Length: 391
Image (cartoon, rainbow, N blue to C red; front, side, top):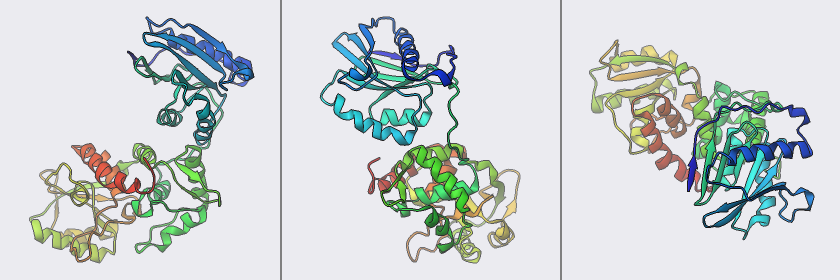
């Protein structure tokens, strides 16, 4: 089996406005020959553009001689395809390749976004683009993957800045396992935050509209027949938000306190009551209660700015430059307290950040945070999401 990884430094300059119909297919056929030509032992038996007469319904077919017979790359050429449209395309082609094991469906575009590439792989498709990025997988024979080439100019697409506090509120609501399976509308999303036990500032309807359009375009959410929408791909949305998330926007302070064990726990529970939900265990300390993970000795907290002085008095905490045993995060947005995990009734402890918030914070806080974040994902988030949707 041949494995080829890495990126290539060649650039394929074309006039995107002219790449339609036969000229697009010709450019994509040439790029395919270039990619397959990088495999020394592979001799292409035949590449042909099938046109509308093909009974397989694909635009190009490449027949590859392999040690154990042959395979056919069945290539669908598109000038543009949004992630939200890929599922329908894959379903429309499924019957054409079902039972034809030598056939490998391949999506070819001038430019393939990382999200669209992920969707292809999830559905068992290969893909490539004119920049030379590709994922071509022929079982037990070829695995060709190249990424990192600058994409060719492509038509503008809807965008949304997932790192803003307002976008974060929408994403938290979608990802929280308490809301799994929920049907949303844009107006219900806007009104949702004001109805919480601990109200969180609601994003504007315009912002909700912009974020929802982007998430639908990227196939993270799915439109419903009645006009609403629901979450479709929680793990990939969480990953996208994690990568955009700005943990450095929260002010971090280091403290030392002599309070330990039960005394510290009780004092923090009192702080929680006084702060009215705007204080919570964070990061590693939240994960202590939410998943078996890598333990560490420091206590991590979120405390809203207006309660910091009360925290210092109640916990008898002193700011230090080193030797801290307590790390205080002053959030730049109250959204970090969204659906905080209060634990069991009668559990006299400060609330914990919601597991979704815990996950993204751990992913950015250093140390063994990524390992602890993975524990939250596997032990807490995925099991609850999977009750409503196959991941």
